[in-house]
Length: 268
Image (cartoon, rainbow, N blue to C red; front, side, top):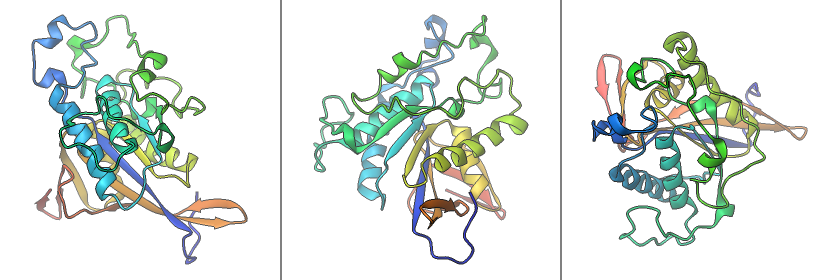
């Protein structure tokens, strides 16, 4: 999609790219030794609480409505998405502060749709996944129907065609393949839904790439659990079709969990 010169945009499209919540293996190291899927840790309870709180924050503070969610197939991301989607689609705006997670929260599933996207998956290399937990038979065992069943009832859009039909191959090069994948998947998903605002639930490297790719002279060195970046781009309409300008990162005064260096200064 190309820009339309100096023409005024019809509207802006927003894309929020966020990291999953607190993962089990970083808090309970012995979990790996008995796990059936040691490469795919779930969230700890605090991770669910953090994800639900982040969803509430989005609902309260973002100046736009999130229409569609795409999520990495890894369990920690799916569980994060489930909490965020519940917060975003809750029937009541005045949510009970005693609800720390989405358990039992009534939702309106028509408010938002969710899809699993392989292109948002973890870095498929030893840079992110320890060799001792990689499946020896090469079968990562991602069962899409089972994954979708973990998402809030009625929110899954089964008509969406995935950009990546399967996982990227193991040992993809972090610089030549993974980072370009993370940058391109943002554009590809946004181009598929130019009239909608998107939330992409992915991994730390994906958030870092999303920020550094669309914010000049920035190098991200850490992303907190549930840290996120907001991107936006102008959308132009001509003859019943849409074209798009370039993405830019929206800088928030509040903490969004992105730690980076810029012009020899450290910022949060």
